[in-house]
Image (cartoon, rainbow, N blue to C red; front, side):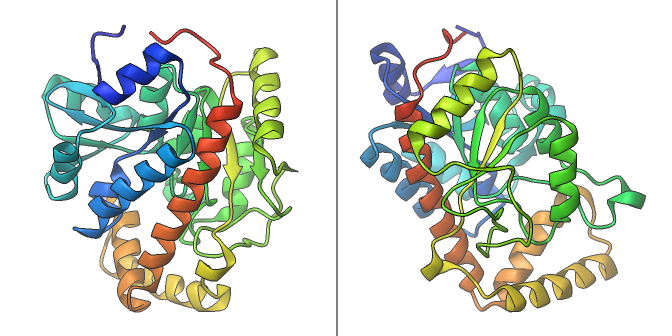
Length: 307
């Protein structure tokens, strides 16, 4: 076992019994939603995964260890600690060596999940190429992680605040397959359709597992994006969310918001401009992803002995 990993009793028992495990990130708790909805969402998502026949493993950096699975008190700590670091690949050594409280991004969660031998990871949406990246070079580390770390990521696509077309081009260049569930179109987080197609539509957990296994058996390292659209009843009208996104982007630019602060700022501002509707949609899509992720974890046999 890797000396920096600390497994919760629930996850340790699941590992010993060979039960399916689903990784969950923690920046959605610390930076993606307000308190107390963030903690409530995290608890409900974990329960959905249990009800789906798998074991949830929310990942965070606490007291110099990579915690794989969190106790209720740890979820509460993350959800109500403004000082929690947003930890990506670059930040992991600092957060661990300095014993900082850290919430893991998609990239960092993938790294930690692979260290722990967990093949399936559920999140809300992945990062991507930011608008204007041709001059700013603002491209999420999530995309490079998907190119090199072998974890399947179930998401509701990428947020409409990003350049979705360039994000998909980047993933194609780096050989990352993009699947969609239930439709040929790639979802756009708050809305079911982005206007772009996924590479392949694969609807069932068994078929998704066969695809992922085949990829890794070929020696093709790297992740797989599984785009699972938000349920129709919870989706937001595309024209409405696009207009609000444009307004939030303009305000962020005028306010000089940059780097890691862009996404939290935009999500908070979009929540204000939609009167809270975007938060409800965000919570609904994460829960929906948890159901798909639990089914996939059950369909995927253990692919390697965890470290």
